[in-house]
Length: 114
Image (cartoon, rainbow, N blue to C red; front, top):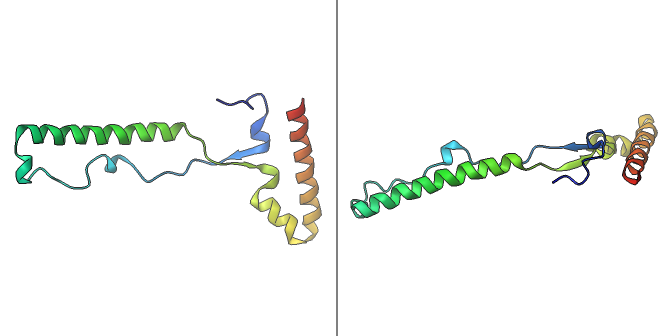
């Protein structure tokens, strides 16, 4: 769902990749092995362990697929960290950076209002 799809959003916004939670294919297993435990010897216990391993694999795969659909944080290009640092530096480039940012924000406002 992207309600601002008609806007040339790439012109005004940088979208970073989502932060990963560190789960990958190596995490698609239990963090410990119960196969040699005395209570895991029965047929029911072995089936439960297989089912648990299957559930973990499904969860990791499902989580990876849902994370792939997410977007990261959106930042206005006109107010990026670099631009705001230039503006606040008080150098000769500060005024030019501020004017460029204001111009870009005005363009964005025109796009939103049209």
